[in-house]
Length: 448
Image (cartoon, rainbow, N blue to C red; front, side, top):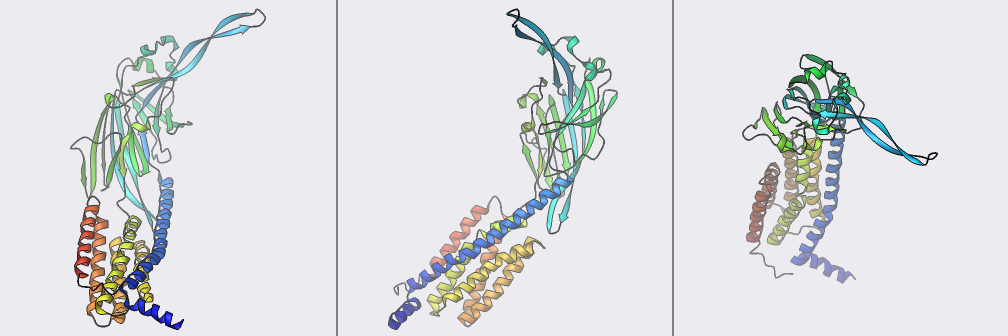
């Protein structure tokens, strides 16, 4: 029994195959704590999203805004056939049903100025904004002829103006719509649709005013977060947006006009122009008002890759870092004939795993670059000192430290890139493979 044990121990010590198997098994074992670190990063990221959503909900969520819509009630006559049991005959009755007609502007211009600012809660940060929005345009001559509505069926006295928005809570001013020479106060109206409705009272003398194109204008000041979008209900809709935010993402159904986008570190500006022919709905609806959010356009104020996203991307290279570092130790062991115990491999691997916990914990209180430098320097010093005790001398510990520092530097460059991350990563991995192949060419693989 003792003899078999000694044979196995000698095989582990002297066989290249055995040592490679041991390192391979240890690498797989070290994936367990690495997966725990990844779960920790995911958990902290979810917590950040929860806090940011809570901050945004109290300040004001995303804003979707339509222009003014003219709402005019009218009636239609509907015949109903009923059966009289006593006379055993059918008779016809006529009922009046109340409907609403919705007319969109002929021209709609939106000018928005967006001022962003950070809001902090504990270690978490959200970016919110306040926007001054100037809306102007004109309504066309109102025409019911397409629906064959009789003039006497139109209830002009109860006509009103409505606005639709996704964020009533964020509005910071009393909205007054200037329609022709009239000023209309807007108030919220209960609505079960996905967009909230703001409606004016009855418009005096509207029948006389709508005999020619009627101009309108109003100003809205609103708090919001994440994005600001507009619904292009004008037959010709134009919009401009300027902001101090440096990382916009132009989203929605329509992109800014060519040449209008200007993005600098101090902010951005953009303009849009949408014609009726560009979207799939008409300028008037009779009986109902559809949800037109899908046609909205605007800007999403995105936060560049945050610390948790960077930490998550860094952790994806954990297997590569641990595997290559253990491979360097293995090759040094094969070349120098210095025996490295499996326990020592485990200690080195755990030190490499600790890099990610240091990174995420420090980055929550500092910049990602500082956290990365501190975590990398700590691990390099620890592994360098430990390998000095294992391998003796300075030659091999210095090689390990330089290799690990190069690897950490390479990974940091990759995670900063977006469009070229895959290309740079592929070239780097090819170079690492070439170095390993070149360095291992003189190892005697016969002792297996």
